[in-house]
Length: 497
Image (cartoon, rainbow, N blue to C red; front, side, top):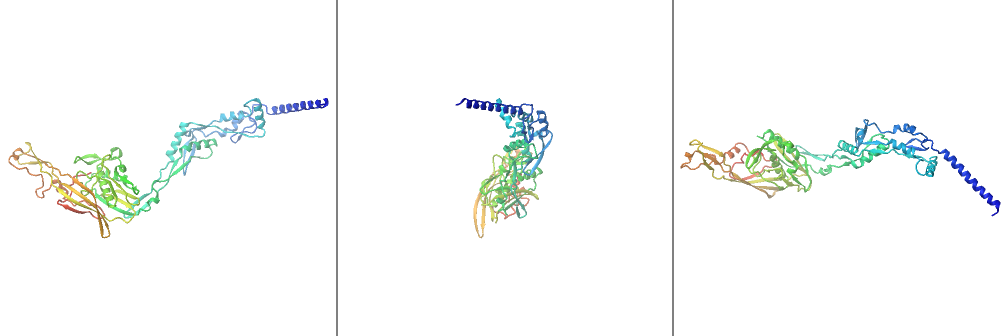
């Protein structure tokens, strides 16, 4: 290469390096650290470029979150409520955002800083404000909102007024989405706490819809039993238990459990002391009266054509319903259970009305034609036990335990279709007779036969005589039971359960 050409090449290289050095020097001077944030830097949507940190802090002061005691509006679905902001457990780290804005073009190796500063001349850099979350308090706030906003769905229900059956529509419920709530809270604070804090919620449908119950249009059965003679506590217990049964919906194939529906009859659940039967005797007990509801419901289920799964009778006949049509219940031990064998859902109604316990089964019509036929066999009590007692005056007798006849009752459900009938034996019931106990003077027993503890005119025990002094209690507002009785005049009035 000629020397002249080489000299020109070296001169151009020197000139290029010199120009580059001059340009770099000028740009370095233009982008030199002057204690200010570099241009085109923003905190959220607020420009802070070319400002000192103190000026930038004043510029973003309005981006601070609400004061702790400030009330914010929180909404879910169609409901809103106001809460103090401090309860959210959220805040903004504005000092950290200011530091990050100032460090743009000031981090990394010198050449990297240089090019970052150079880029700020034409490129915007947006700094977000970090959200600080107190996880414990935020979780408590979500739970607080759930208690305030959650609404359970309302199932469709059946109403019976006279002979008219109507369906009350169900309503969906709403539930706060607890998993999505925290993300929504973060986003709301990060966006500047503008407007309402909207928490995500989801609709919850009722378990029993209006469509499912539209077919219920007829009272399939209705049974009444009298409450006459019941104490105030006993009536209260019956009404309380009935409120747990009233409106119960039983889908096809489902089994109703009295104990599961009513629950324990305990004082802490509101039940009061009233007479109950224990070991064949009336004693005070919590929840006395629950068996009258179960007995009335048992008859209504039989008359509606439902299938009995489990049922037990009392140890003694009861006053409010004929023997064989009662159903005793003891929580955790003895239950009344029946299955809906109909093709459509049914509704159970139970209420105290005009001195009567009323139970009804509503379903899709027509109502079945069913009679309950009882065949009753009366059982004589054993000869009374006579006990000599020197404390008894000569010629006197003291009846310590009254003799009571027993019964054996077979109940048949008779289905009537036009002129045809079909019988179904539903239960065989045995109520044991009770042996009497008499105390007599010692002298009166010498050479004298023991006298039975029975009514001389009728040959039946005093307890039976008491039961026959009034008319027998009604069984049902539907067709009456047919009875074939082998002797006797009615059930003893000896059970208030």
